[in-house]
Image (cartoon, rainbow, N blue to C red; front, side, top):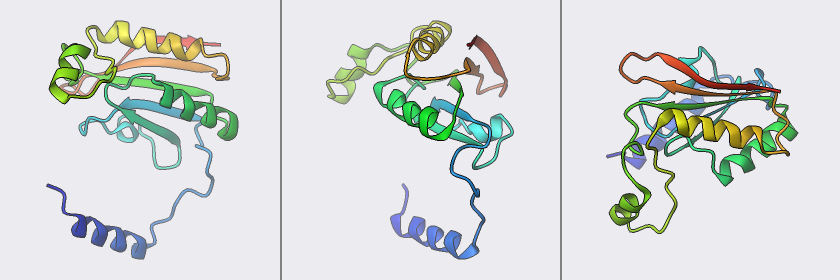
Length: 160
């Protein structure tokens, strides 16, 4: 269990260390990465990036939701992002279950966007991004990260 006092102390040490932050706010690679909240996924490390090079968006299952679209509207129009990677992964907790089962298990009356086919879900999410008129994207890619081999497979790429 996370100890709040320890986390706050680590935050104090971090601030005192004076670790330099990126000098610009827009991501230098004009890139946003949507990935799962799974703790095994480190998108910066996977793609050889550093803090400041990409916007990172996370949710259960790396699904394109209304909140993702809201964030990408800001990223694209205010911060020059023109490329989005949707990075799903094997071993996801949303894979192989149904929304009905998740509603029953959580008691939450939500659409969880359960995944029965990684490739199909990625293709649908890429299509949703490409088909969203207010997102001026140059490239959208759907990728599948294998948590065992740590390899990334390109599932779908759309260029405008």
